[in-house]
Length: 224
Image (tube, rainbow, N blue to C red; front, side):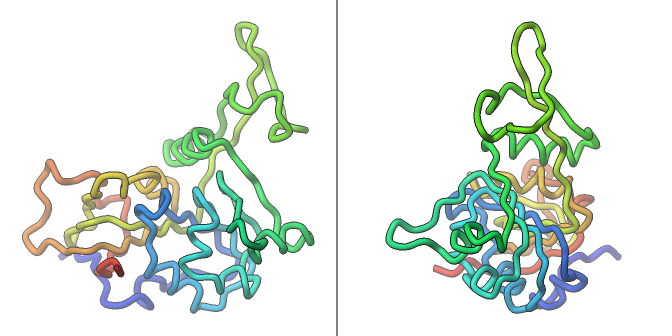
């Protein structure tokens, strides 16, 4: 009998290793898998590549990932830290201790979607003429310059959803969905924390992401 529900964060995060690439869902404070991020910080892994919309929100969730220099590379759309003082990840980047790719948000989303769809690369006009595309392959299509963007995939994806069933089917609440569905398709192993586990199974109209893309589910009610 299929049952993807695990009992604790350690079981959920089993197999994540040093040097892993990890996608983390979230837009603002919506859909951030806080329990899983804190569990990742507690694993003391190094050499991680993190792929997420806003680095600041993950740092607020568990500063140890950057304070203890566990991350070697970040792919993100928003890098700015608090206004009061430079965050530890900003200082590490300036010292060359961490590398960084900043992407336009639409490009970020499409690179992940392409990774899940098996599309190796695509051309887009977004960011052409800016420093973000310096040194990159560019071509003209119908008189418009476009830059080549490669698909993004990862070893693991950490997501948050409102509800799941034992098969791993997911229901997202509103903007909680953000990049989660695309990340699940682009990762080899998808781990999800949820507020609720449905004992009777989700109704078909509730399934926003089929369980075929999910390997583990952890019940972890959101902290308020």
